[in-house]
Amino acid sequence: MELICPAGTPAAFHEAVDAGADAVYCGFRDETNARNFPGLNFSREELKEAIAYAKTKGCETFVALNTFMRAGAEEIWYRGAADAIACGADALILADFGLMAHVAEKYPDQRLHVSVQASASNPDAINFLVDTFNAKRVVLPRTLTIADIARIGKSIRCEMEVFVFGGLCVMAEGRCSLSSYATGKSPNMNGVCSPASHVHYRKHGRDLVSELGEFTINRFPEGEAAGYPTLCKGRFDIADAKGYAFEDPVSLDVMGELEALKAAGVSALKIEGRQRGKAYVAEVVKVMKAAVNSPPERRGALLARLHSMSEGQKTTSGAYEKRWR
Image (cartoon, rainbow, N blue to C red; front, side, top):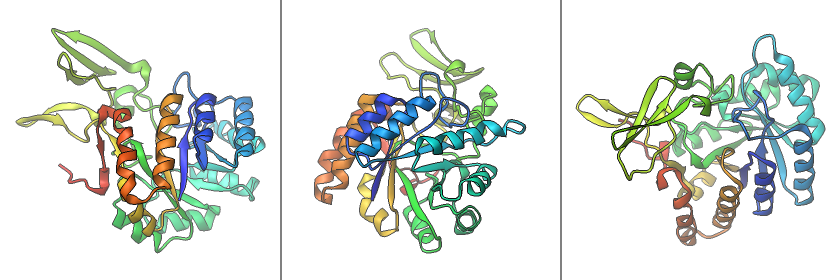
């Protein structure tokens, strides 16, 4: 199975390639990209140079244009697709059906992957995208079980890619309204989930309080590590209990399920983390490449090295084992 690795900067891109990535995914420094954060992403020239470097190492590059087009400003996304193709992108990762239609018509030989943001999670939806836009691969949402993936794999006519490590989105991806509600900025339109411009921390007695927009997300007693405030990983008073209402602030890790994923028909394993630094990317890719190429009995010792780099230094199998509260 291919290892698909993240890069939010040219430096991280080089680290991912050198660490053994089969493909690296990245995006432009604008609203076409669902990781549209200050200080991240690529200019056109940076992308061209990165793709050229990857090709010398036998590594592919996937360019994510994975937000939904803004009415009246479609040209921004059309130009992004044209520039990515001109730079030599091996595949475009798209969410918007209109952009898929544009690419399929204008660039019929360009490989198209369906972004997780498209939220295509059943055979009818996926085969529609294959038949209509000639999609070659679908990135499945992180809310599916292995049994779900296996059932889908038997009925679709394209490759399947799944997230196996990194940040865990618990929403119906491509349909999240929580960040929009709190900040007015949409993950699916503006490319920013819980934008840093709306994040605040303040002291309240001995506690550290985190806020997103006008909402208090968490309160950390002295000595507890403070997490980044996203609504879906907030700690709230719920009836008589206090805790994380949707999901704990932990990282996804399903590397222990590699044999089951392969049997389900998965052809590509994806690491989340385009907002992470180059040292994180280098270590995670190196360890996971070794794990993929190792027998099951050796993986535990390898993957233990990743726990300290996980969110909250904890991991979860997410929907693979989730018992929803």
